[in-house]
Image 1 (cartoon, helix red, strand yellow):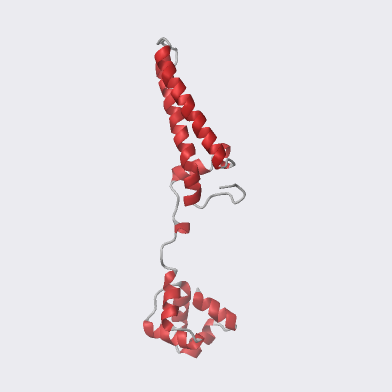
Image 2 (cartoon, rainbow, N blue to C red):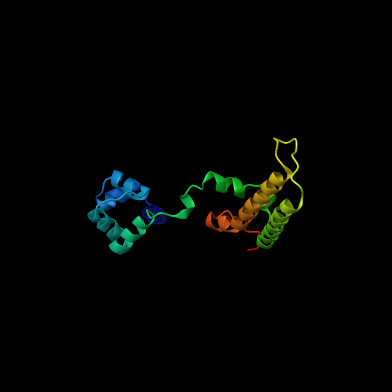
Length: 164
């Protein structure tokens, strides 16, 4: 990438660079594609462009280090970040959602001990079972709303118009 930029800045083609350096066109193409080439080839290229060979080597092969921008996000992260109801919420709004959901979970759990257990016609569940299920669901959603800001930051999906 760097060699290509230097070559284009000087307005020369790959063939002209190959002739000037004595390298093959294939070697020039390999360097521009980011593949490793011999140190001797790098010395010739560095001399042609009047740059330090060690700096050239570091610049060429630094792009082979791993970066987070090319790491694929897991499916569940993509699904959570694409929820339309949560996409436009900023951090304070998500915190309010989390607090309300935890409050409801606490209320539902306490209410499950205060009301009588009556069997409902939904899958033969009792009212206590339904309250426990709703409390668990509320806690799960509170957890999801608590991790959304970190998911946005880590996956670089944060909308730049949203406040931190």
